[in-house]
Length: 344
Image (cartoon, rainbow, N blue to C red):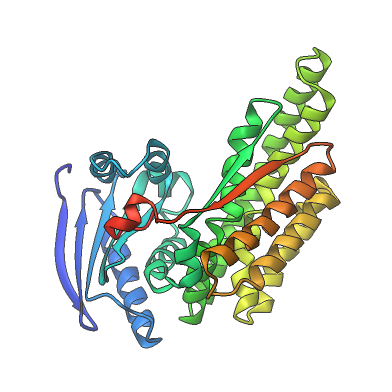
């Protein structure tokens, strides 16, 4: 680790909070937000930790170096960690403690670092993951989804990650946010999600550049019309569909007004530009997420993931693209799970 510029030990409602930072400023306000998070979770009786390690770091290189030493962690997972504004590590065999990592550089790139409400939202969400462990979340680590992607070289990269996010990883995020909402963090999560929606709207500017690239490729006959339509639609789906994961928990806990506030922006600024097939896919996924049960076994969750994959496939079919995928149920969890640590 780099030179430690801050170390402290505090006790909050019986929880030992150790804070370690290598950043020059902004530590005390984040510690105060962390204390608020601990107290509200404890008040809602949704707090499991006796000990919390809060790392506020310039970047997550120290964590990544540790991850590289573990054979069970892949290069893609390490890359995912590096880009996260925040992440949490906890032992499934010892849920009374966890380590939360704040990535200052990634938080600043996302525009969160100087927005303490957004930073509190990140802390709220990360702390919810251990509490949100249930049958469905555990089953999600026994299900594997693979795509047979053809066409333009950009499609495998986009569609594989998107399909996994919308199916395998969605339960973890949905139940984490639902847990946070049940602990009365609605205003904080609404603020964080308003920023996510605003970022997605700003991302529409890049769509025009992609459209020009596709038009140029088709004019040079470097890309077929079918591949061009699939690439553009895949980009649109990647931009919009993950937002259903964020909105659905508000409906799950009866906070319909907050959900509709987020969706009103999508209806006015995103759906009209992206077209009806994107909105249809969004609404179908939102319905699947709202109705997701917390007690699914791996076989039942695999069937649910198949229905989610079907939504993605049906949307791409409207662009003339056939999406083929395979869902398998594993007999054993990944090595991280056998060690007791879930994937970040």
